[in-house]
Image (tube, helix red, strand yellow):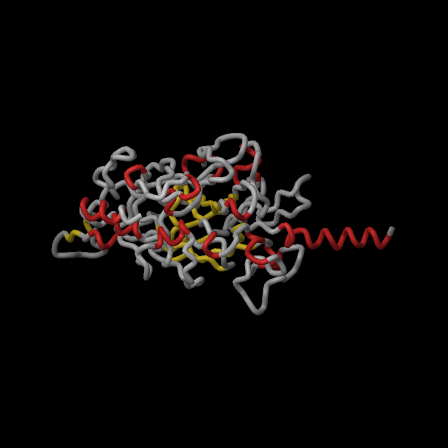
Amino acid sequence: MTMFKLSLISLATLVPLAACHSAFFHPSMYGFNVTDKTFPFDNRPVAPLRDRSFADWWFHGHLDFPPHPTDFFELPAGKPATAEIACTKSATSYFASSEGGDVRNATNPNDVCPGGRGPIAYHTQGFDDLMGCALAIAYKSDVKDVEPEDFTIFSVNQTCVWTRFTDFQVPARMPPCPPGGCTCAFFWIHSPNGGGDENYMNGFKCNVTGSTAQAAPLATPKVARRCGVDPINQKFQSVPGNCTYGAKQPFYWVNKERNNMFEAASTPPVYNDLYNFLDGAQDDIFQDSYADLPDPSPVAAVPVLAEIPVKPEASTSGPVVASQSKCKRKLGAASSGLAVRSLSSGHDHDRNSRSWVPTSARRSRKLHQGSRESLWRMF
C-alpha cells in the first residue's frame, strides 16, 4: 500500500507538466498563486476554459485572488512588452513561488513545457500550425467594473504559443491608464489540430508607459468577423470587405454564458488574419483611426487609415501632417504570408521571427482601391 501511495504521489507531481496547456505568468495576474489544490477542481491558470458559467470562466474564476496592489505588467507605448508563457509557473522566472520548484530548461530558456511531449504539449502540430495569442486592455482600474465588451485587443503575436518569452508589440498611440492602472488579459485559442475546443484567459493589472502627445482614446471594440482564407471551410479567397476593422473584442467561446463567438470545434476563432487580427500592434484601434468605417459586407470597400495630424511634443513652427506610412507595420520577407500559413506550404520560416506571418492585409490598407483589389485576388 505504501508503494502504491508513493506511486500516486509521484504521478500527481507529473500532472502539471503532462497535462500541459499554457498560461500567461506574471505577479500582476489574478490567480498568480493558485494551485491545483486551491479549488475543488483543477483551476490553475493553465487549465482550459470550456463549458463554464460566466463566474467560472471570467478571469478564470480568479477575481478573489488579485495581485499585490503595486504589481503591474508594463506596456511601453511603441515598444514590445515581453510576456512569459508556460505550461507551469515552475517553468518561468517566477518558479520560486511555485510548488514544483525550478524546472526551466537550462539548455533552452524558451522551452514552454520542459519535460513535455514537444509542441503537442501546448496544442500545436508545429510552427505552421500556430494560431496566435492576444493581449487585451480595458481602461478601467477596478476589475469589478470590467465587462467582456470593454476589452480591446491591442496586440497579437501570431506565432504563439511557441516560446516562453513572447513579445507583444504595443501601439505607439496608446493613451495613459487612469489612476490605479488598467485591466488587461491574455487570450489564446489553439489550432483544432492540437486538441479539443479550448479557450484560455488570464487577467492581470497593467499600466501603459511612455504615452506621447499622439495618444488617442480607443474606439468601442466590435466583434471580429471570419473573413480570411479559410481552407477548412473551402474558402480559398479572402473577403477583405467582410472583415471587422478597427478596435475588436477578444473571442469568448465554448462556455455556457456570455459567448460572442459560436464557431464549431473544428473551426475555432483564432487570433490571426482569418479574423483580421494582424501580427503585432493593432494600430487601428483608436477613435480617429478611420475617417470612414463602413459596415462589413462581402461587397464593402476596404477602409483606408486616416491621416493623423502630428501633435507637437514641444513647441513647433506649425502643424505637421503624418503620412500614412507612420501607421505601417514591418513587413516580412514574403508578401504571400497569408497563403503560406493558410495552405501550409511547408516553407522553412525563421522560427524566432515575429515578422514572417501574413502581411498582405496590412499592405492592402495603404494602397488605392485598384491595387488593393489586385492584391487580394492573388489568393
